[in-house]
Length: 191
Image (cartoon, rainbow, N blue to C red; front, side, top):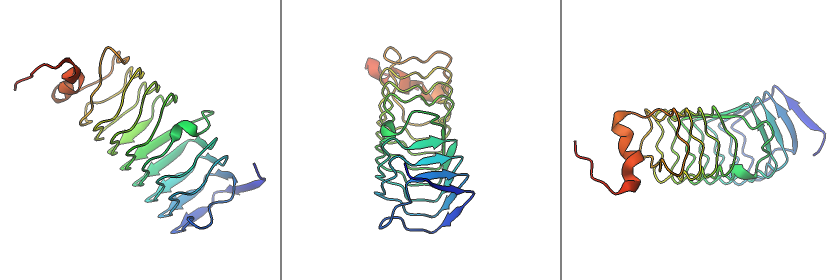
């Protein structure tokens, strides 16, 4: 990693498609309406950074550190979170599109996915204990050997979770969402 270090810097409406951010460490930086689509952020370190209304789809993030980072109103399609550094990984998402993203085998306890679109995301073998999926659409998201203990799905939509293939102790579900737990049993539930 280079010695490049930025602290408390704001990037506004910056297009990083031609020239990605310099490899290094970014602490308490804010990215507003920036374009990082297809950018290579490999081996960068983001600590306590905020991303607002950014386009981040298809970024490369091999060994990237994301510590206490938040994403609001961002488009983040097809991201391979499983290639990031697992050290200190701490994220929160609000009103983000995360379709086709891979979170395979990550430890993300307590992560918030507030009003996010998570279509066809891969959460296989991921630790999502205590996570909140308030208002999120989980259509065709994959939960396989996933730890969902104490997770909150009460206001989530379109999830399908097989109770025998996932750990769901003390997870919270709404009455309307029960079909998402029973769909694998090929039974009919009438109102």
